[in-house]
Figure 1 (cartoon, rainbow, N blue to C red):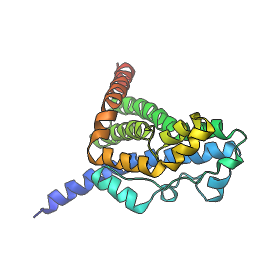
Figure 2: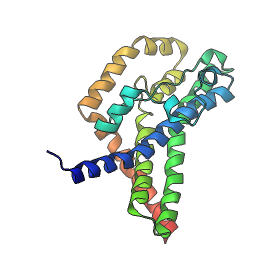
Figure 3: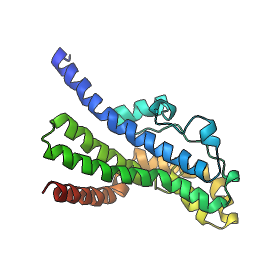
Length: 212
């Protein structure tokens, strides 16, 4: 049975995780909606998704799972490609916007980490910034995988000729099942591992340059 100190430590460890998750998810979804809006699709705007309020982007069950077991999902941003001037190109731009924003945030967070480190900030703040870097890197790469409903699948589909694009979406549900299998079997970790390590090393070098 957990003592009061153990419970407090557990709650603190979870609260430290919260800001990084909320920022990474919110900015990812906002980037999709905003880029779609700038390209002529106001669906996300009309749905109230062009906001920094995390509650507008969180799926409760998906977030609880992400917060507790490390795998979950956000509320999909509604996009209507029929409003785009160039459906394929604009769909790719909107799909890339989320992961690109995550990678950008990882770099910005690295700069903030270096500044906080130089200012001798407390370990809690440094840990929160470190987690913010990590979550943005993982979320960015994960969403580039070519499996529905991830952003990578929309990028792949948009690059295909129309007749093959139609086939791709016809078999979408089977590709989704493959993604679930890859996650459950921990294969996703192996697929993303190398890219996450390389990008983390690059971020570490950036931080060392900034604090030297």
